[in-house]
Image 1: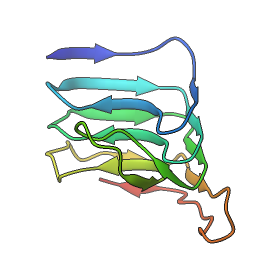
Image 2: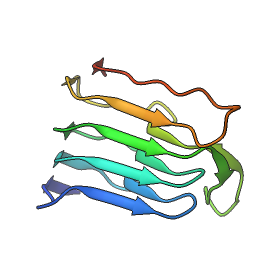
Image 3: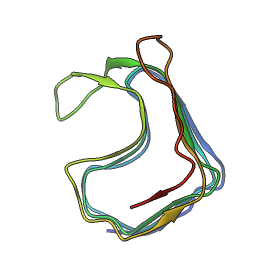
Length: 120
C-alpha cells in the first residue's frame, strides 16, 4: 500500500487510452494532484478500481477526446474519454471537489460538459 502520493507538477498525458492516474492493484491512503489533463481518444484522467483513501485534485481534471481503443485487463475495447472513472464501485472515502471535471469531446457525436463540483 502506498501511504501518500503528491506529485510536484500537474499531470498531462498525450496518447490513445492513456491514464493520468490509476489504482488497478493495491491502494493509496492519500493522493493530492495539482491538475490532471489527458489528450486522446479513450483516455481517462483518473481510474479507480480498488479501495482508495482520499484523492484530491486541486485545479480540476480535463479530458480532451472521444471514443477510442483503450487497454483494459488484457483486452482493447472502445471506451469514451472521461475525466473520472470509478469501477467497479470500490470503496472511497467521502470527499468534496470544488474543482471542475471537464470532458471535452473531439467528435461531434459526443457531448461536451463540465461538472463544477462533485461529492464521492
